[in-house]
Amino acid sequence: MVTPLLDDNQLDQKGLENLIEHILSGGVHGLFILGTTGEGPSLKYSLRVELIKRVCNQVDGRVPILAGIMDSSLKESVYIANIAKEAGVQAVVAAPPYFFPVSKVELSGYFNQLLSEVTLPVYLYNQPTLTKLTLDVPLVRDLLKKPNVIGFKDSSGDMTYFQKIKSLVREHDIPLLCGPEELLAESLFAGGDGGVSGGANVFPALYVDIFDAMAAGNFEKAMKLNEIVFMVSNILYSGGDYGSGGVINGIKSALAHFGILQSNHVVSPLSSACPFTPEQLELLQTTINNR
Image (cartoon, rainbow, N blue to C red; front, side, top):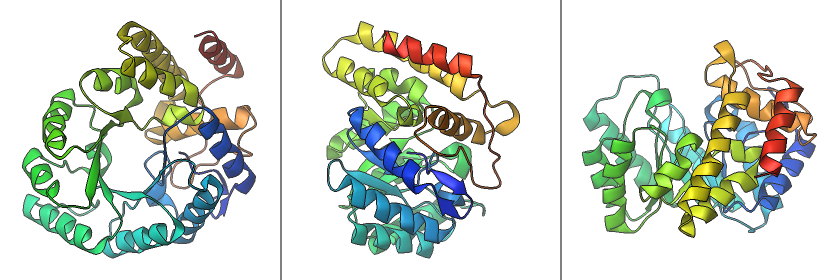
């Protein structure tokens, strides 16, 4: 879920309320807040805390909530995890720390300490593009032995890696989720259990329909729907020189266009920009409505 903002210091409270109800009305099975698309590591801590509390209060147990605790400081990750537990979050999501180069031994030590201090269940999050670190197979094998590791999210886009991790998580009967939404149908076909799809902020039912089609064994329908996901990607995420911010810009701009958010503001240092024309978005909406 994106984090609705009016500026760098202020949540878009009305937009947040609208967004939660919009996403849940599409039939999603859970919310992941303060992730990459949610700009988690860029938000000041008071905003992270406010968001967690507001989301938990509004969702009120209707679906599970996962909260990202990604940070360069282990202790701040633990702090946010504690806040999340008090607010009613079901599990937290932990990626490797960023900025300093970290050896395999240090990365193992980091996660072992984090898992010993965080009392909520934990999803491991492999995000090598942004953290510059990969949760390699031997490390994952060791971490999955920890009782509070209950899931894994892979955003590498490497399906060979995905298959290796799938073999490991099957031994522990925990879910494996795919980050890149363009690979949602493919990852489900390969034995994955679901996806964490940014486009579901805007078109939640589309992604739920892909999941349902795969669950029903209707692979042809799922692949046809996945073609629309590529259309979503091509229109919403074509942010030019905006890098990772292009995805967030596209999602927030679409939500603002449809009146769900009051603003498409993206927190600094990323810039707020609309990567599509209204005509492109209306074409996309028509295609989805006719699916």
